[in-house]
Length: 238
Image (cartoon, rainbow, N blue to C red; front, side, top):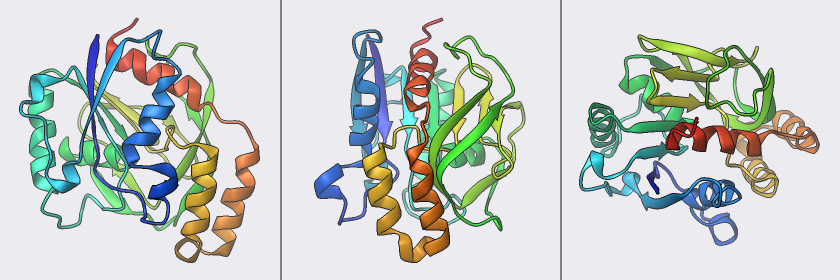
């Protein structure tokens, strides 16, 4: 049994939570299809609200979720979260960062994150894959996932290797050693959730960006493939 903790660094808009639950709900649903193949135990900690595991070594791995926050902003929970992630790395735990989690791990390890002048990236994005790691089973030449971000990693941490990129997002996925994997996209998003979220944030995104994002949702994604990759990475299943 592999013990994994989901570190919730954000929360759903109040209008969407009754239908879709917490951020962790999407991750549970996304990984549930592989529960028989990968024996995992999932717990959730709302770090945005100050909840943390008692010890960083208590779990085999951690998933850091998305957030409306920016890593460059001043939030009371951010520095304790950075400290916990540093301690988890020192304890040789596996870390998977998704969207904000991708940015936060880059920041913790010495990279740089900014609000990109490219604007919002939402909808289905396709990324070219540059490396073939052992946990990438099945292997792909490119992968399409759903996205929702404006911030981007613009400088990688020392020792980071780029695994995937696109014209819109140069550092869409990176790894550091065998313990850190991050992805800018949201492989945990369902189509229903993406539709609802994009519409909910139409005023923020603008009509053109929202309409393009919504129209892209008719094309297939490989969120299920990435679920296998993530679990093989977290569980060490090679």
